[in-house]
Length: 406
Image (cartoon, rainbow, N blue to C red; front, side):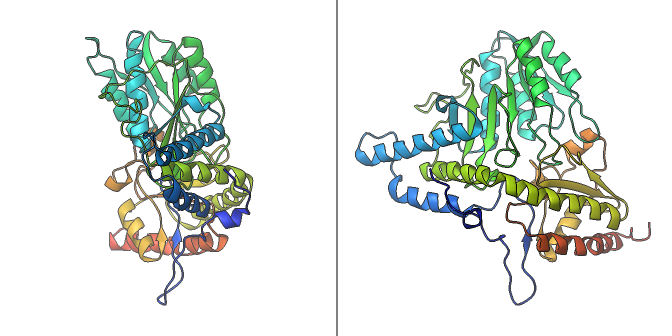
C-alpha cells in the first residue's frame, strides 16, 4: 500500500467549515473518531469498486476481496509490530477489548480467575474484567484487581508487578497511554513483571497508534482505526501465539470476529495507519508545540483551573483541564456555540457526561472538564482563536450559574 505522497495531500483541510455568519469551526475532539484522512477515503472508494464481494466466496470477485483483506491485515500487522497471523480485525475497538478480556480470561481459567487492571483503563476494559472474573466457567469466580495511579495518571509499576505475581491471575491490562489526559504508562516494566509471572498483558494502544512510537512489550494488543484517521468500524486485535484464547460466544467461520468486517474499511484503516506513521515526526512536533501552548495559556488565563496529566511524558496531541464552579456540559455547549468542538468527561463514556473515572482515580478536579484531542491538520490559528475565547466562555458559564463572583 503506497503512501508515497506529500503529507498535506493525505490530510484533510483542518476540517473547518465556515459560512457568512462567522469564522470557520475548529474541530478539537479527534479522540476515537478522528477526521478521515484523504488517503484513507481514496483507498475506501477504490476498495468499494474492487472489494465489495464476500471474501469468503470462491469466485473471482470473492478472491479479489479476500486478497484486499489479507493485504490490509498484513499492512496493519507490520505497522503495529505484529505477525500477520497474529492479527484479527473486529468491527469496533470496544468489541476488541471485550473479546480480548473474555477470551483470554476463559482460556486461562485454570491458571486463575483474577484480572489485574489500572484504575484509568477504558470503561470497556473495566467492565469486561468484572464480567470475565465473575463468569462461572469452571465453578469458580475471581475479581478485578485495580491498581491505582498518581496525580498525573501514571500507574504504580511496583504495585502492578506485585499484583501480577499473586496466585490466581488470568490476565493483566494496561494502556500504552491514557487517551483522556495523555500520560504514558510504564508498559515495558509492567510487561517484564507480567512475563516473569507467566501472566499475559493486554495493551490498549487505542489512543497511541499512529501518534506515538509503540514497543513490542505486549502479549495482546488492541488498536482503533477511528483514532488514527481510518473509517469507523474497524479495530485491530493482535494476539501472540503463546497466549491461550477460548471464545465464549457462538461458533462462526470467523472465529474471533463473527461475521467479519468491511473489506473497504479495513483497507482504508491500513492506508490511514501507514499515512499517520509516515508523517508522525512532523505531526508530533506540530501538535506537541500546540499542546504546550494550550497548557501554558489555560493555566495563566483561566482562573480556578487545573491542567492535568504529565506535561512531558505524554501523547503529543491530548490535553485536558478542569474548571472550578462550572460543569463540563455547559462549557462544551458554550464553546460549540462559538465554533469549537471539544470533549468532556471520560473519553470512553463522554456521551453520558458523567464525571470522569480517570480524573477521579488521579485525585484531581473532575468538574468543568474540557478534553482536547488535536487532529494532525489542526492549525495554530485555530488553536489561538480557541485560547482567545476560552476565558470569556468559562466566565459566562460561571455567571449563568451564579458563580461568577466566587
